[in-house]
Image (cartoon, rainbow, N blue to C red):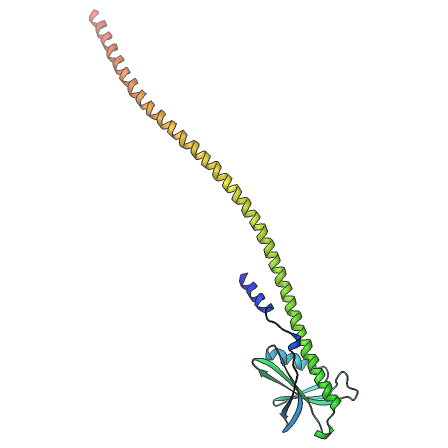
Length: 228
């Protein structure tokens, strides 16, 4: 039980702050060309973020794996009038955390769609923000469960203390009663021993008297025989 509490408190002690979300304009080499895009570090395990990110993207595009990146075909961005567009995404690892990158796929660099590019930036930021928010909410839920667990345990301990105090009082009273009983028994034993000793002395005295009476009786009988 104590281990479980330690695990819970370690979990809720990890601080996640939405203000730490920091998008960076970065360039990636994709299909032999430098592609402008945006990257963000997600504070969670790589595989967990990868699965969630691709699931989100599959809801708005056709995701196709291409070597070390994913091609996002027929990408429908939420606030972009001219649909669809095409983009790339990469999922990397940075300091054991997931690093997401997304960038436009242009027919040529001069024909870059700045509105779509801006919408990609907004989409990535919104994803990172919602992911971080969900993490915080999960930690709040963990903290609430931990508080409920600790509260129930605290109440159990209060009840246990009350029961223990009652048992202690009963035991102390029983101890006092037994001590009084033992004192009475010790006194009774002393009285009985004295009586036994007196009884032995009385037995010895009575035995001596009996022997003397027997001698007197024998004398009387002898004198009676002499008369005959």
